[in-house]
Length: 84
Image (cartoon, rainbow, N blue to C red; front, side):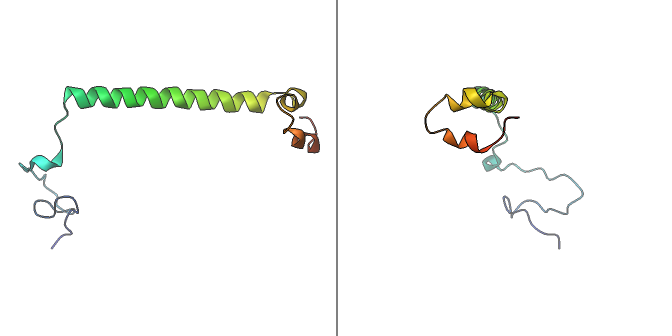
């Protein structure tokens, strides 16, 4: 006997070669307009955050030693390294 699917143990098998058609409404295959809009909004927010973090990291990497040292008095550790 083939291994059963953990999500739907009563209806499908993992090693089954033929597609399993089920009327189980708990499968969550129906996508509403509201959930699609929410997913789109989440992707947009994630994209904006990714771009922001990438630009912030790139600006710190590309900044000169003197300019980085001038950011705050706590940045004294940059004196331990030679300029690039």
